[in-house]
Length: 416
Ligand SMILES: NC(=O)c1ccc[n+]([C@@H]2O[C@H](COP(=O)([O-])OP(=O)(O)OC[C@H]3O[C@@H](n4cnc5c(N)ncnc54)[C@H](O)[C@@H]3O)[C@@H](O)[C@H]2O)c1
Image (tube, rainbow, N blue to C red; front, side):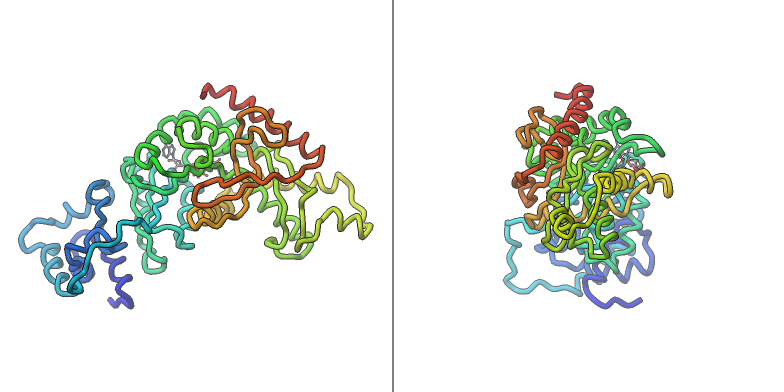
């Protein structure tokens, strides 16, 4: 076996040390990182246990120790420790690392299709230093954790941990909630609400208990109602409770237009707002292609179109999820990429504008404390501000109708 870099050695070591039984491979690979001087223990990503890990001791992560006969004289573990101590030497005069935190921890609750698509895109895009996974199905959770850890040599290098106990999530900068029942073929998102509210009553308080400074990103459906529920249950300020909302719908919208116009979707700007679902509203008045206002361009060029054509395009957006669910049983990749793009804006303070589910009270004549999607600037503090884009009378009326639909759902939830 050969290793090209120290980090590859360390990653491999981490996997073996946590989960493997003592084998020759274990002995060889442990050697490299077990040698870290005590002063550096807890600070090298992927090489040693962090202080947090030592305190947390999630059972999935620590099973390997007992298996390896950690304290047995002459055990593979003990030998590896000895060999390893020769490999890395502290530079004379080394001090402790700076107190300022420079790493990011992300939690994903629910390791189903959506949770794992989120985890996978976050890892491949190197958006966090530590990833904690939580689910109620222990075997599946452990399997997903191991499967991701086994890709260590091909990933940028985040530490991956998992447990059914929320202590594993401690100190998360961002908690993404994907847990819950998903839509069946033909089932609306709103029909899921009761099942998932019950789950949220357990999940949200636990997340906030272990990460009081976290931002919550809600994905489970119906996402608008559940973002409201998460806001109420968490006690966090509204800028730090965000629903993925119509970020995905807007991507579908932009892709459909781009596909019709034979142009890259990143050059098509346009938002779907309101409910992530059937009552969503396309903001045609602000669609632009390469900076050119779309409707004004059609008019200027005297290109004929009817409202029906535009309505049909929007219907394709709304039906998009149903179509994928009918074909493959669930949606996963697009929501995974949509979430990664939100994570990037949040953790890297990118201040990009995304249509996400926020408290819409006071915007566009909406009086209720209702969660729905509006284009918002997103950065490290969560929602920095909601874009006050002018709507046509028709768009405003449609948005208010969507708000009414969602307010009715919220009222049935018995959450205040
Ligand atoms: N917002 C969006 O744009 C969007 C897009 C796609 C799917 N979704 C929603 O995401 C959710 C997940 O969909 P999926 O396809 O991954 O479903 P799934 O059934 O594949 O996965 C759900 C996971 O949640 C876990 N879970 C259930 N109860 C839990 C609890 N109390 N604590 C922790 N984990 C728990 C399950 O064990 C399972 O692993 C659904 O509500 C779905 O409708 C949202």
